[in-house]
Length: 176
Image (tube, rainbow, N blue to C red; front, side, top):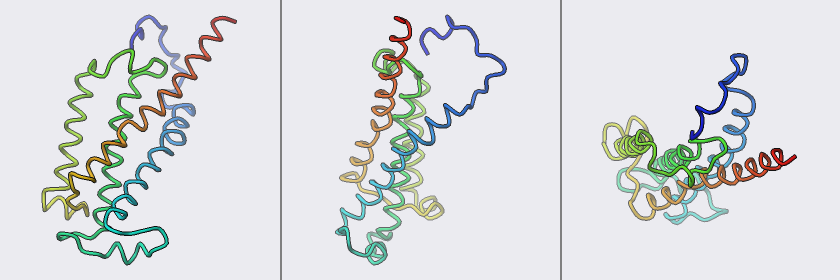
């Protein structure tokens, strides 16, 4: 976080994991991530012909290249967790300042972590022994991976909007 060394240290009585952090992570950002996961799950079903009002049970049992639609849909759900956490990783670089101000490439460990995250997920999806253990199936580059990466900025955008309101509130407090 830029300027962190100019601030006084946090009080030893203050907990690192507090109610404000839990509320932001679990209720605020977690809700958006849950919606993204469900969207990825249903998107996969949709691309294989399922439509609202039809039985998910029957559609999920349809075999697709050695997997079932259900297995592929749960793979997409896991993929949505992975891609939304990419955006979240950038969002959580600071509590108040915008990532657009500090830059996306300023934390090389985060960038390498993202590469590792994608590689590990790909291993779980495409290496046969691992895929069976984790009940994953081989998702398609188009449209599945494209949909997952379209979800990546979701938590970043949502948290940037939150930070905008925080910065405005802090600016008003400084004026007063």
